[in-house]
Image (cartoon, rainbow, N blue to C red; front, side):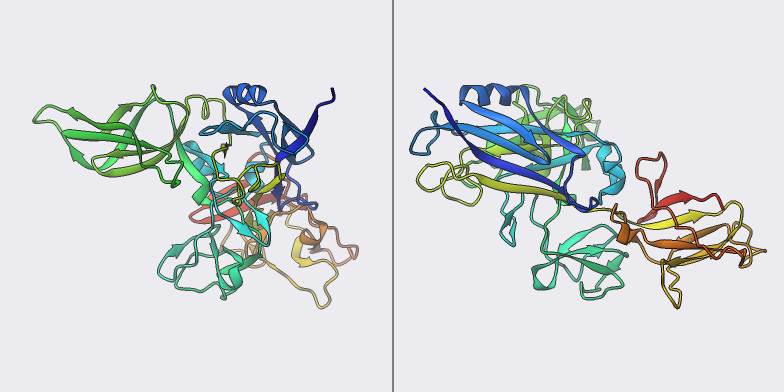
Length: 403
């Protein structure tokens, strides 16, 4: 008897750096426990191009042959395939010392008909301080990226913001601290008495308010106080928790292996959602409806810095512009010789990193006027070591010329 399978869920990985928008820098890999859950539920997991598919065996009426496991989840790690992903993607890579991406189908983040697995972006707040790379929802429901440190400058101010359109991107809201079973938390206030409460997911409400450890009290010596407290959560299963110590909350993802194995993040697909709701795996009749979701990454914006060790570059212009448009300014390492000495050029504004030729379209104007055939300025190569640096809130990409 032939078996029939159907796509239960597809997860497309997108990245704005690439001309075709497809991200092949990351792979979704099921956890060991998820492999067992998939096997027992007659489910398969496949990767086709930049899309990850969860496939299920179905009956003639389009229902799963084996009921989906309720109150359960499928866990997939985000494996980093190409390290240059860290250079081309718009996030603060320094935060990855302790944090990783956490995404799931518990979100509610739909834009232009696309269901995103990342957390919704916050609406612009006029009182909040923003730094380059921050993303918000602004006018017209569009995503806006901060390009210059800003407080009180609305998203309509193009000196501080640039529109990313209807797409929704992973952001700081998707980063969570990953901890091992034994972990030390830093508290805002010292104490000699520590009360620990830990809460798991409430599948009815989506809140993390189900107690898994209740009122566990630890006393220090009467004359001793500390603002660091070590907890032992090794008896809890892997997953996301809200840890509360003396009334102070910490959202964490408990997984001993995630950082040591250098995982980029984790995706949790929950099976308990009511049939027919936006991110449920089955329609209102309990049939497979091929849930399509997307995880999208924005390409980084940075200042481009061209080094000219032979001092043969007079200026850098937009290719073919006449009169010439010069989006770069020359600088010298020798203030006395400036501005005649030009050791490097820096873009006047941060520019996106992209493999698209249209966004890497600059020419070198050489100081020797006999060179009328202007060479192209090379684009940043994200695979080169040390290409990206950060100064204060701004990122720079470094490009060394042979001129």
